[in-house]
Amino acid sequence: MKEKSVLFISPAFFGYEVSICNAIEKNGYNVDFFDERTSNNSFLKAIFRVKKSLLSSAINKYYNKILNNIRQKQYTHFLLIKGEVVPIWFIKAFKQLNPGAKLIYYTYDSFNNNNQNSLFILEHFDRCYSFDFEDVKLNPIFKLKHLFFTDEFLNRSTNPYKKYTISFIGTLHSARYKIVKSFFSKIDNTFVFFYSPAKWFFFLEKILKKDHKNISTSEVSFKKISRETVADIFKSSKSVLDIQRTGQTGLTMRTFEVLASGAILITTNPYIKQAVFYNPSYIIVCDDLNQDEKRSFKTELQKLPPPNTPLFNELDEYYINNWVKEFFT
Image (cartoon, rainbow, N blue to C red; front, side, top):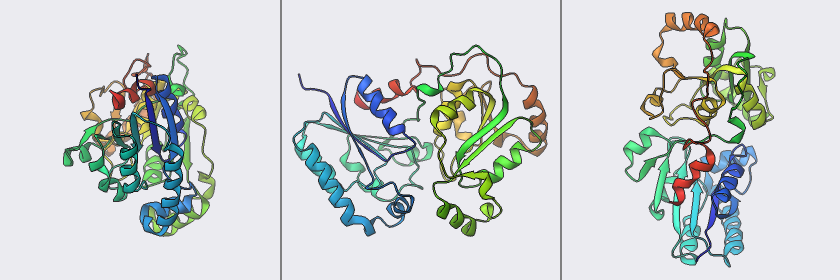
């Protein structure tokens, strides 16, 4: 019987790629992982998105090296996430070396935020998944697949104590700062953490974006917060605010992490009402509230009891060990 083996290529994104590798292995597959990008330097990451052709020589050299590393191996599957950088010639070469392999594509970004390479490569894949509701509607090649949560967010505690009334942890982009400041005003016991990948990028955003002009460096961290710390804060929060990126309709990773941690999810994304798990006892869509309702909601939020049990647990399809199974069935 042929050994089940996966070539997995993905950008590094907050260590989630490592968790996906572990989940694939727990499902009985061998997995070889390679970062999609030649470098995770914040400046080069920006170039990959805006003008990938400037780095074409380095990209081809990098993927030739990967090809040499895998040439003597046989794979049953190739899982690619995002696909902003991987060259078409590499995908074709992989198929020649592994003629019976299944090729699976997944993106956790909308195509408004992906570069064009992601579109050009889709025809080479057997199955394509996207987390974005509108992209799935517009492109029949896609099947909708939400994101996931990892072990850290599983909450088996029976302790009802919540240190924070509401918390927010996320990357600084779009109108997030303005929304958080507006929503958190006049609420006691809050936790806020904004992350920016680099100081140069933060100051560039301050120049280019009106919403970021008055943000102080003291309000932003240039170091990532660990996933374990994020999980602890969510478990200690009565509610968590989730703000999706402008132009995206897909549900963020935070959506699933919050609902597994036992907190109430407060989200700006109305598309969550289309999800099969939507439950107004656990999920509040802030776009449904007018200004007067938002003001009264802040008062009510402090009185609101937290859920008795989390909406998600390890039996759900969104738990990472279960989430990866669909790719390989």
